[in-house]
Image 1: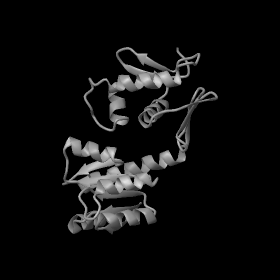
Image 2: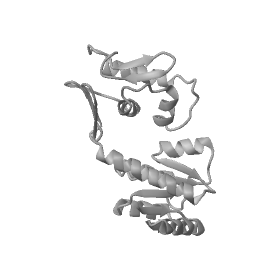
Image 3: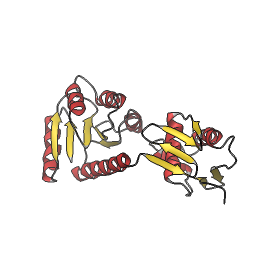
Image 4: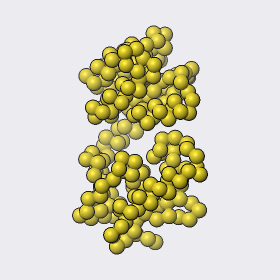
Amino acid sequence: MQLLIVEDDEATASYVQKGLSEAGHNSDIAAAGDRGLEMATQGSYDALIIDRMLPNLDGLALIATLRGRGNKTPALILSALGEVNDRVEGLKMGGDDYLTKPFAFSELLARLEALVRRNATEVQETSLAVGDLRMDLLAREVWRGETQIDLQPREFRLLEYLMRHSNQVVTRTMLLENVWDYNFDPQTNVIDVHISRLRGKIDKNFDTPMLNTVRGAGYILRESKA
């Protein structure tokens, strides 16, 4: 792997770089946020390791800027800020994973490898299809038959997860953890609201409903009812 470490603490940056080198990976170091942004934009990296509190440009602003420019390089946030709200904020700003300091290098390496594997899979897969429901992952478009369906970003992500697990019962907990990124209150009605909106868009005005509720279990997306 080719990695970029954006970390202003010299001891931490050196420790991570040494460990990566011993594991057979190459890495560059940027000691400030603006320099990290420049290197991440100009270079080609498999993943980024970004501290939150950086001089000149903080880590979350760095990630948000990259995402705004269309840069989807996986970013692991490394921070001493470890409260739930801190982690949720980091993920919402575009981070792909969050590891708090102090940390074990073995866990850092395992998380990086998982991010790179996941990203490689996503790059290779450009579309999904379940029956006449099609999703273009690059253009961010959804079609059912010849009808294009307009989805909000969260609805698109929800449908993508359901399509990747088509013909399987997906629980509320699975959706909260994988679509909303974190463990929210399982009693919240956010799932019901979004499922209802999504069902209205992909099933309304079509003969065969695809998104079904499995009472007491969750939801299932399938080509037709059993």
